[in-house]
Image (cartoon, rainbow, N blue to C red; front, side, top):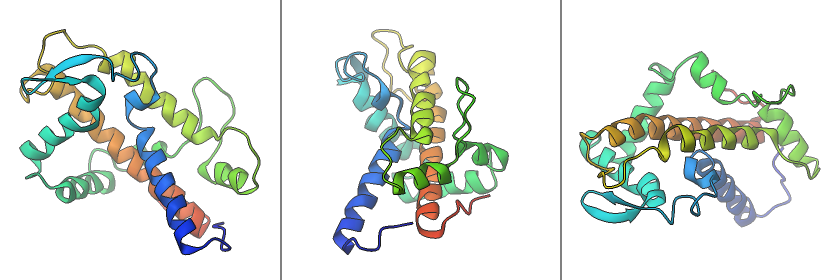
Amino acid sequence: MVDTTLSAAQTQEALKWLDHYLGDIGQPLHNEALALGGNSITVTCNGASNNLHAVWDTSIITQLLSLNYGNSVNTWANSLISRIQTGDFSGSVAHNWISCSSTTQTLRRSIEDDIAQLMSRTITPLACPLVWSQEANAYCCSYVFGFNTGDDLCTSSGAYYQGAVPIIEEQIAKQGYRLAAWLNVLFDGSTLLP
């Protein structure tokens, strides 16, 4: 399904865009307009002033990597992979992550359907990214904006940090799994995932 007429540089650019896009839609504040996606909300993180968007993009993850993974992104990624394969994200949990059905629509789509539509050059919204974006955005109301002004959001023993970490880890795992599924469909015609 990959356009073989593209140069290696064009294919690489397209893959970078896909990687960035599918990764970003899993971060709740990337799908939020309130206060410019949290960029205009000043919060405290590790005793310093920061904006809420940066705290979710970087600061909590940096703290998590330092405390739990020896500052190693590779160790963290391997932990998430293990949790997808045999841990708390395994089985039907991970399989449901590549579902494109919406709770508000009766239409059921698959990644394969979306990619086939995309490759046909039909300009209509893709179901999967829209559903996944809505799912991530729901965390804004249920958790992200639910902090107390003045609290340090990055204190590892604090309630906000402790609640944010599982959301962030699951969203990162989901988007990695979803990216793998998209790439498998593009290059092999099927998700090829359990």
